[in-house]
Length: 462
Image (cartoon, rainbow, N blue to C red; front, side, top):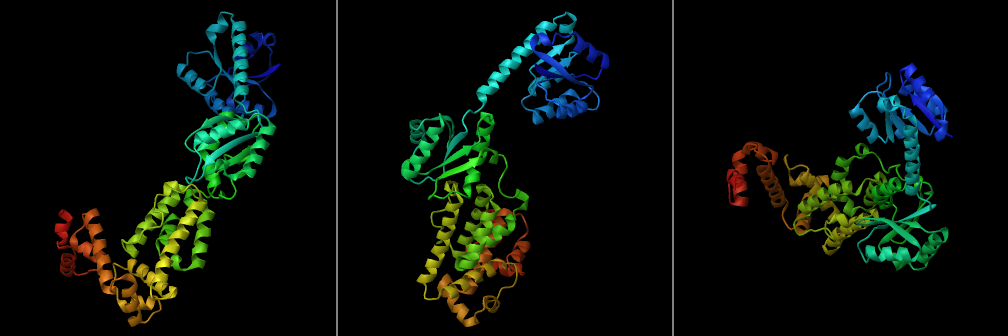
């Protein structure tokens, strides 16, 4: 017998409805009744039920609110609306929430009780059959995801390869294929083949998701498509492309909440240059960044800002090795290698100079020192002191390494900063002069004209 819970706030209507319907003829048994949604939820915690029949307009908790809660807590339960009014808006909402049917006063008045229950029973059978068809039979599902754009097989190649090992491809998009095994042997054959021939699906990671039997196919597939790239992002290594996870892992989320990641500090630290010359600091910063497990989009926001500042500090001749097309970095491994490449490029320039890496690193620190103090008074002795160098030696090293004298470099940076403010704000020239380290507007205008051939006001108009 299919167990039924009837929820109706009118005592006489509820008792009459329960008494008049031919429940057993159609395989039903009313095992509980309640006067409102809250009481119904209490009963559901104590009594297993197959079918909920509920009125919509009730005190304490309405039928609509009850259906929402039941859909969340008991997704397999069937629901039918019992309405003695033409509450079409409510009925439409109930149907959107998954109601199989609705029983009206008109049907009951015309003694069509048999038709009503026969219809409900038939729809329950059809819904159960549809749900059964939508459930996964296999204990393991395979998800194949493109993790590298280097020497990778096409999606069609990988799909054919899955089919050859008895896997049925069920879903696919730009980066992910999801396949179910025909039997337990096909899964083992695929894993064995991969281990024997690592290049068979080069560029693709293969994830065996266990514990999938009986799960809703659409729900699992959606979670896999939404989360798999993020889950693999920090653990994937090109040297190991076969992974196993339990299906329950999906939906748990990874990393810290966005508000707990100190993005502003991270942007400032990575925009500096000192980590490029200090291996210990680089390793510490890289480990900290990986620990946050933030989405790749957040990493892009950090390093777009940082790369722009590196170029500003090191000059237009500097370009990050491999460029800044971050969309091709599908893994933390790729990001880490890129950062190592940036560091090696700068250190390579240091090794080509006539100075030691330590001296080169001090000059890099002085560029950060200057950049953070463009609005204040800047002097060569103070900059030399900040990096623990003598004034004369710092002046010579700065000129040789940067390619400009200290004063020319500072002036170029200040005028560059002023140009940005002139383009992006409507502030008076006097304010822009002060923000660029020139408390005297007249002197600022003179220097600006020497550097650009225009007065600040003319530059703004142009």
